[in-house]
Length: 311
Image (cartoon, rainbow, N blue to C red; front, side, top):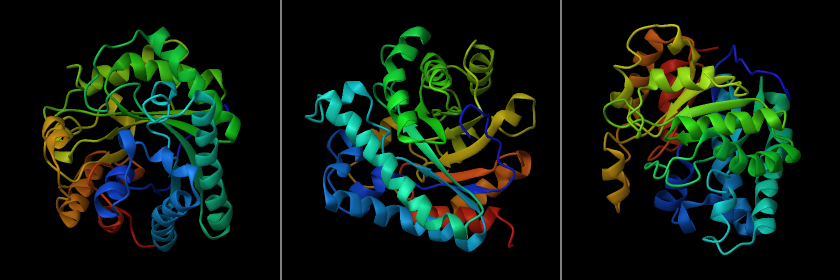
């Protein structure tokens, strides 16, 4: 797949809210909300495998493909020091994360229509607050390091998850192109359907599309409840055809409210499935279905049952 744009004709499931599930449902400590640290120990690697396997079983059961998203959302260079690592150690954990999901693919691929290994790259800073926005060239320089490590480990694509601003999205798309791997960009939005910077989702997609050297296979929306962006995707338009994935939150709370919570808001899995189904009625090109903060296997199961026709 290297160097090619990815277009999925079949439904592709992916996982739910990895970090919130591990932290709140399974009681696993994640310093700095970074699941990549689990790759340091055999127990941590076993916990990640135990997390992924039921999702793969679900996809196999419903006849869908699956995107194995690596536990590297918070594993770019600036996070080494806060995690008590040097850069070489963090790079090694990035590689270990890809090795783990590649092993899982090898185990399941003969019994499933398609499994894609995705190297996950998160924002340089906070996942909810864009903070000081880098220029697009600065973002390219920064994210190329992790993109190169993930590419060398053998990913099929790079997914930029929870993008809060246009420049960082452009930077990661350019970094992926530089290392010869397809890119997927997933924006997060506030309760008004706009990025945390105030940009509309339409303007954000169009800005990345127009940026030289930023080829993107498709776009997604993640880390927001469907109620926050349903109106934005309420009608078909040329730009919405580029939105092909959803990874929504379980909770209707704002990012600010979620950040202040000490208990998980898991919402209503069945309702979430129906909200996905309503979005797909308007945007049938959406093929990648998963979850984000507060979601777990229950939510993705409900989404699959609501949206994927029986085989």
